Image (cartoon, rainbow, N blue to C red; front, side):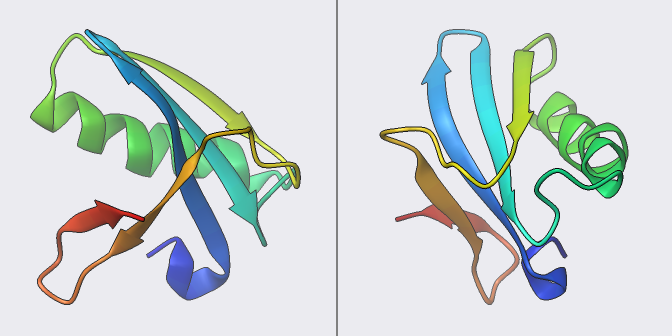
Length: 80
C-alpha cells in the first residue's frame, strides 16, 4: 500500500523487543507520515509482535544499514 503511493519503508534495526522503521520516498516529511505510522505500521507490528517497542522516523535521508522492505506477490514482506 505504501509503495503503491510512492513511499518506501526501511527496517533500520531489530533487536529483542525493539524495532526501528524509516519511511522515505513520496511520504517523507509529509503530514501523511504520521497517519501511515498510526493507522498502518503500528497496528501491523503489534498484531505479529505484541509489546514491541517501535521507533519511527521519516525523511529523505535513509539511515546507514537500513534494508528496504518490499511487498511480495503473496502479500508477505521481504527485505533486500
